[in-house]
Length: 261
Image (cartoon, rainbow, N blue to C red):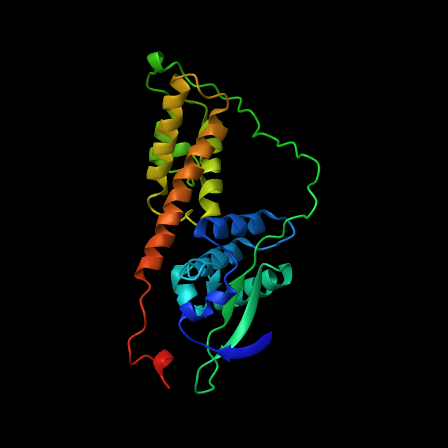
């Protein structure tokens, strides 16, 4: 760990920022998380994303203490898991951690600096993208939709009943509902939204949007198209939350220890 420095308001650490915008920062963060070499567990990803919410005022730089980050994670993260996440992120080169002290000399929270995802100097051969597998499920003709016989009470408890009813109105096969919901949880996991109460509402809106495009004959792969719509919706909400958090960060009061001589 680098030599300890005196902690101060996060604005004083702007020189450590390596990003020009929150969008750029999040793009690099997602690249890190998509790298199979960065072996973070699900809880550790939650911890990393909770920490990243405090790297907005000064983009890519956070000096929030552990207790604050744990509170942001809403009970989904332990102190031990957070520390393990920091060690793994350091080992992968994702972050650089600086120890800080108060002006009195007492230990303070660490300064965590997020690093850009490394880019190859020489462009490699073009990568052929593999599209999401084509779903075998075919929707009903919108003009001939009738009440189907899917037993909603027999669906997996992980699939909300409202989502099941909406999807099965067009795709009566039980496997179809599960496939669409699987894509929902995958999209939500990217932004730590999988436990949010409003996720079902967003998923239903995204599905209805997909059906609307399907009727216009603009959709070749319904499952992949639905996933793309939902990702954009959740990404927008994520940025809105980050901006709202940044707006709510205020300067410590004059009596705060950060202003002590």
